[in-house]
Amino acid sequence: MKFSESFNMEFQQSNLDFIDIPLDTDLQFFIDPTSIRALKTNWGGSLEKLIQDYFADVLA
Image (cartoon, rainbow, N blue to C red):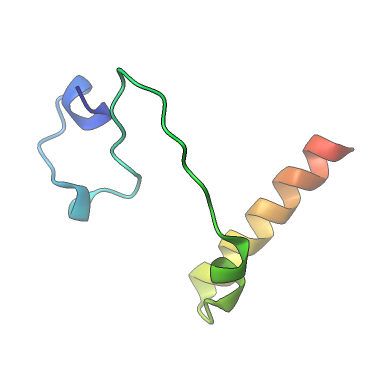
């Protein structure tokens, strides 16, 4: 069962703002920071800052 099914969301992956993961298994999910930095959009810049701030807090 996927996350969206568990919460009765009637959307396909293309309409969701998150990755619709299966809840009954572990996943190896990787975020490529080089690809994020290469995004030359406002969203890419915001995402890069969020990730940097998160790891700054974790490593503090």
